[in-house]
View 1: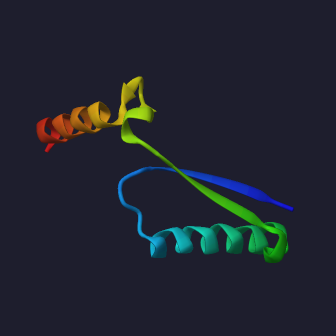
View 2: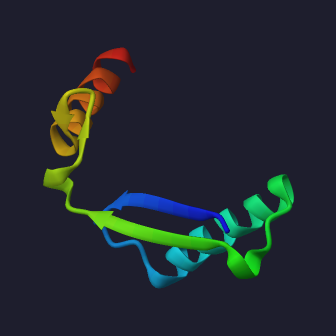
View 3: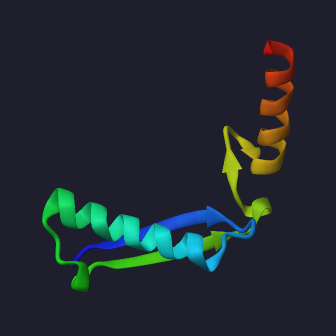
Length: 74
């Protein structure tokens, strides 16, 4: 009975996109581990941007820093 927890930032993922994530994770477990889709649980948690960090920074600051690097490298 697999349980998959997907965490994404709260930036407007549509119901269709969430359904695709659920179907994709379920299909992957069925194909790779031969798990029964009927007993596979997928939960999507949406996290506010200010509650998500990457590389020691809040995600918005990290993105700004990454864009700054792209501008210098490009």
